[in-house]
Amino acid sequence: MTQHAHRSVRAAVFSAGSWGTAVAKVMSDAGTDVIVHARRSEIADAINVRRRNPGYFPDVELPAALRATTDPAAALAGADFLVLSIPAQSLRTSLDAWAPRIGPDTVIVSLMKGIERDTDRRASEVIAEVTGIPAQRVAVLSGPNLAAEIMAGQSAAATIACPDEHVAVRVQQACHTSYFRPYTSTDVIGCELGGAVKNVIALAVGIASGMGLGENAAAVLITRGLAETTRLAVAMGAHPATLAGLAGLGDLIATCSSPLSRNRTFGTHLGRGLSIEEATAATRQTTEGVKSAEAILALSHTHNVEMPITEVITALLGGKITLDQATAALMERPPKPER
Image (cartoon, rainbow, N blue to C red; front, side, top):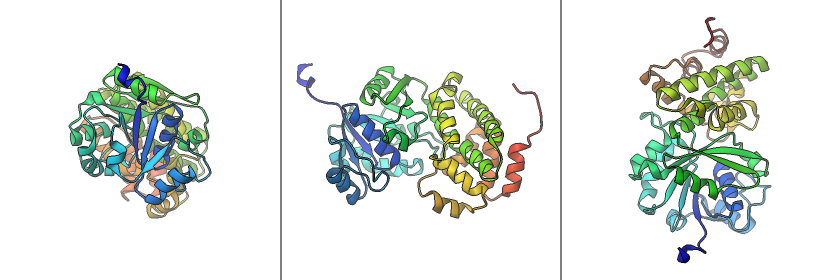
């Protein structure tokens, strides 16, 4: 025990996008030794020299202890945690390249909120498949976490889910600060689906907002969106309480209500009449809901679950229905008893 007493916990955060940077800051503030893997040398240099990430948060000073590198092997050397914050659709390819460098005891923490197209797999499933790492060493962090607020040190909370509760507690300790409060769970499925489906619901709320529909309409979409998310998650083995918690309802409210949310913003652009290409250019960052909608709908068919909002959004994104048809379909479902 004594030989490890002075060794601080190490985390490698891949990569230096907005959410990756925010979690790197949180972990560093929590006393974890953090190294960020950035793809571009100018970002790594700016983090190391100027304590800034000019690509995302040019005005926020990063902790002095935080370091960055463009070398995946250097980042992974001796890492207790590999924190993954990359687009869900490039996870498999990226992990293939990094897997040989991952240590035999490294815990992988997924920050990703998407479902892989073509395979319909959740991020934790892709991680286990590509790396061969057992599910007990893969954790998921999810909750109402708008990166800009966390970078500003504003209060937030999240759920850390892992089949092994001891591992969840270790991750919790590595990112617990005065402004960021993590809770633990063993319901990985519930956490991942809550995080993925809420992006699709946020697109619907954004569309309604862009079309000038009011707060009542947004509340209807959030409530019905939670219902369809819960139906799918429970059919896949999640606990319903998870969807009523931070990774479900909490994340859904933050993403659907905030102009800081990129999925809601993307939807608003569509609601105002922009094309998908124009909305993509205007949003500038990865919009997981656009990428994952089809895979989520495929999961709903596999598990025989009705997901009317997801269905409408997928049809709209695929060019199968017009904006007016989508809005009508979202707001004019046939009346039936609410369960």
